[in-house]
Image (cartoon, rainbow, N blue to C red; front, side, top):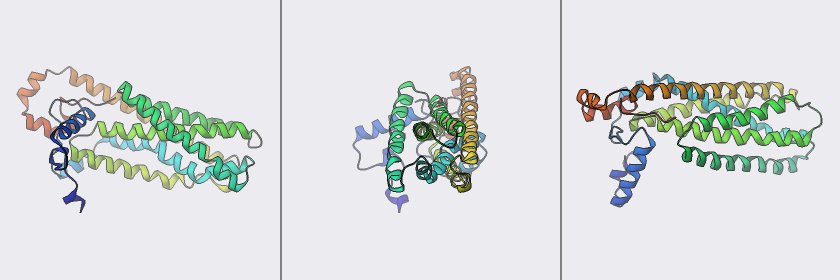
Length: 277
């Protein structure tokens, strides 16, 4: 049903005014690469789009980056009420005490998303939030199992603050750097599928017999966050190197070598495309 109801692009949306279509197309061009006419939003599905996603090593690394959210948050969501109970709260009160933790996570998403858009950079707001969650895991792993309830509760805030904000930047970053539209659609579905597989791990690492210290749970979360931070750093370096190489190319020579249609079909492989950092 969606295939026939949902417009393929703002240009084909009959319910939009002309100025709304122009505005939305302008935003889409700004979201991916440069506004140089090489981002295609009317392309058709092809096997090339699928194989282009599966063979794109940067997307596999993006999944590792996204695990910094999915594995951590799945583990956190299933276990945090039990952790709060171990701090001395009764079961009913423990559920209420977890609410501020998630409110802090939501607020962090809004703050870091605004900062990323303001400074026109993504990778910093992946590494930064994940580093905050990393500090929380290190502290909870290092603090003695008995006592220090207030200190433990404070560090519990850092995990959702970092993990929730980090995944928003990861997904935005990925969407910015995929073109044309079919490659973006397939690529985002591919990465989200791989990301959600992290739930298989995250929901099974906080073992009841290890309460209240949970060395395996916090230790594995620590390792996952380190891997995600490294993956984000590698992606940032790779995107920067590709951009510099393309900046050194002569635009007139590129346009003499390729037609506008060919450049459009190349999507993010076009010499005119610039990756968002």
